Image (tube, rainbow, N blue to C red; front, side, top):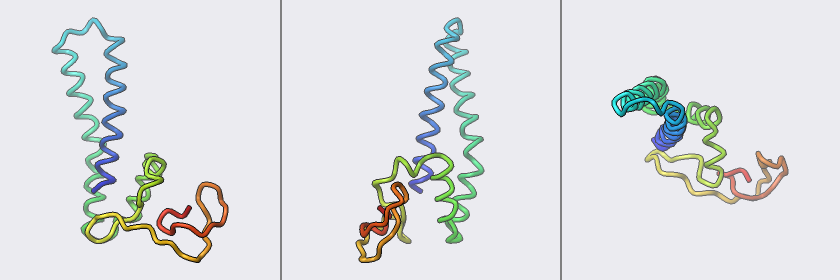
Amino acid sequence: MPVLKELRDQMEGVRAAELKRALRRLRHLNPDDRAQLDHFSHTLLNKFLHQPTIALKEAARAGREYGLVEALKRLFGLERRQSHEFPMAGADGRPLPPTVTDRKLPCPRSRRTTTRCVAHLC
């Protein structure tokens, strides 16, 4: 699932940055200790992400993933980075193309009513 990959990639970036920051303060550690900290941080990240990953995959198998995907995007700030991508996917998992309509819809950013892309609501 693309959202899981993005979440894992984002969390891995945070993990790596924080580890690098910590290791700068812990220069006295030998290479083996540094490797242990790296392994610890990987393991901890995987444990934190395990249950959300399982829950989302189970919901997807049952056809109920949309609400969880939207919650993950909002909780972890994924929607801001995906604002110009297609937010919804078809049954095959590929993004749906934007649909232009004559209906006027509120833009979630500006709160203005606009006749634009229904998929992006902007």
